[in-house]
Image (cartoon, rainbow, N blue to C red; front, top):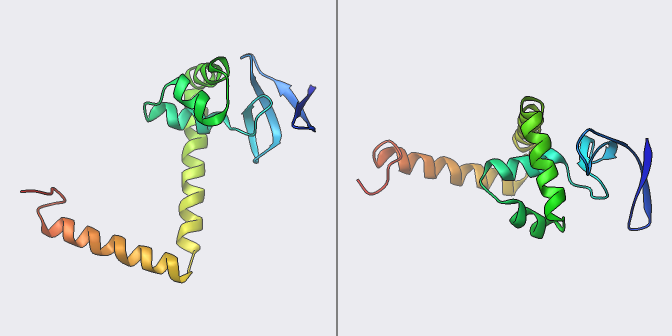
Length: 129
């Protein structure tokens, strides 16, 4: 275990076998993060799966390219675990969205339902045919 400092705040972290990747139980309820940042490895992995480069992610999240590549490497070595974290987070977000009964959420659901109806009437969701 060692202490990582970020903007005057110290966190107790445990290094992993990949440089820059630490186990950090205090970071966003996530166990794996990029050292010195409040960024989960599975967040970087999700964007990586969407096709973003290490350079784009480094710029977006104020990381070094080496830190972004470390997250990619950890993902490649532990893909099943990280994919499960991504799925768990998506399920958690879906449950929170389903539980939201605010007027805005209700309007958004109605708009999505209307759009889906329109798309299905236009030929199984294919526009322009």
